Image 1 (cartoon, rainbow, N blue to C red):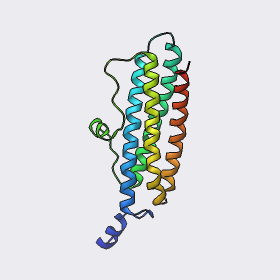
Image 2 (image 1 turned 90 degrees about the vertical axis):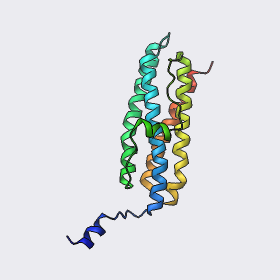
Image 3 (image 1 turned 135 degrees about the horizontal axis):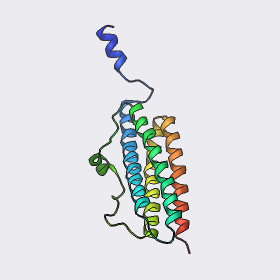
Image 4 (image 1 turned 30 degrees about the horizontal axis):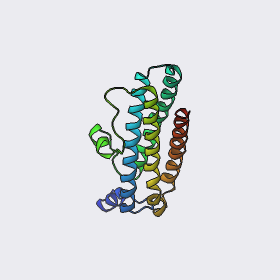
Length: 166
């Protein structure tokens, strides 16, 4: 392989301009950080929930953190597919996430539910904010990923909020 063909082979051309890919990756990096932060919070609450609803909340939180854990990889891999490194440290996630860290002292069960509902709504807002970037760049794979994530987060927020109603 010649230097010219080697250089050409290494240049990325998937039909999305480099600046558009960078903008989309910026949004996806925030989505990844939000998802991971919500995963950690949900797992923490699974470990620390107490009270009369222990069994049902413990099981619900496990299903939710498992879903979040399984969502992290496709988001990171989409970032990689767009030609950028995926963030993956606590420090990076702390700077990128729109969610607050889990409270140091575990809250009461219904406060956990409210925190998680707020978290899912925040992640939905983050995902929704990336659509204009993906649309502008005709990035259908990212739009598909965002649609899947929005479906999960909006439904989970609704289910959690339903527990808070009288």
